[in-house]
Image (cartoon, rainbow, N blue to C red; front, side, top):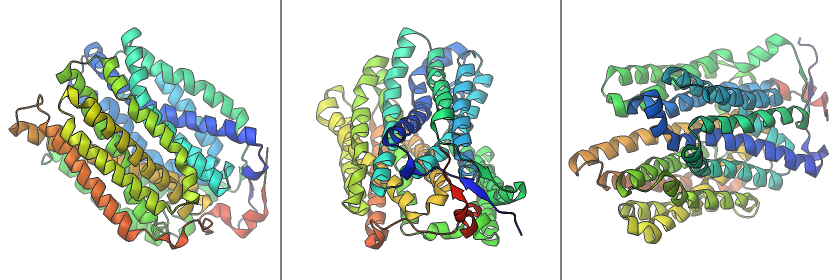
Length: 503
């Protein structure tokens, strides 16, 4: 028989409004920095290639290295946040991001900087699920929680496109080193402040019980499978989809996923990394498929337009970044719609968002090839597409947390962010292949046909997502309390009796 377990957790009802808002700012800053750490490099890549003598394929690993490790370590981070202290995981992740960025700013060689980018991905993977775990605990009222989650996601949208402008200014007026130092100058003070601002959470339980709750075998199998899968998808467009470098990891990854599913069926639900019943929570599976779309849409826009404008229209780096700003401003404004989920069904809000996104994607497909089409086609395409995809993102994020118990918030945050990354990786690989194939038969990279084909493919994906949410989303549990399920060791009746607040 296990000795009694004592847990001290954040009780949002006992925190002052001021402290809640300060905590939300800290979580949002972490989200901003994680997204900025990726998008700001879009404008720095040309300078990095020249300074470090990188080839085009090597420079892609500046993004891919962090994406690979971020996606791969999300699950273990989520489980650590649920079983151990999410405060420690959050502060460690933000601090790690600051240190790796600080070091990257002093590096002028391609191998060390790619390694540091991979380490920064692990740090980001530690901070995001733990931030969501803490956010759900701090904002326990459903209306407040929806608003907070929406704003949290909105800061990621602002960073995704604001990073372009800030990165462009840093490159133009200083050097690429300051892109990394900018992250460090913000992340390290945030980590230090959070040591004192975030309420303490003391978890005291036997060491073996903790390790068993983490399901290290299952987590390790899935992490290895994700690493191999993302690696093969990233390598596909450059190495060829039929090459052994792509096929072998892909096949091994598929086998390992099957092994992971089998292992999880053997594990007790309270000890499984992802309990099988998770996928049967109301609407969880369909919301997971919707989560594959948002970063894919944003990444496609980022991949296509800045490079197209600079290469073909000969716009400056800063001019290109300014023309992308509608996505940041509209994305952030739309993030304040979280409270709508307590008035209307998330189904109709998500469908409205996907419909707007389809219209915006059509405008980008038909009008992106000429500079004079920016205002009549591209600008409204950005506005409608961003508003739509942000509605879908925000309310999918809110609904997926409402579908599962709060005790699983770290794991759910990992699953949600994993879906965002998987969708982006798979989608961008498909978009790159389509664009390259069409360009080969329609005049090369100076013609817009390949990019238009990529947007038509993206339109088809959004349409499929709309159909899936229309058919499979069940409205019967809208606005109901979160389900209560003893999904982890930390939620036994004994544990609930020993739960106290430490301020």
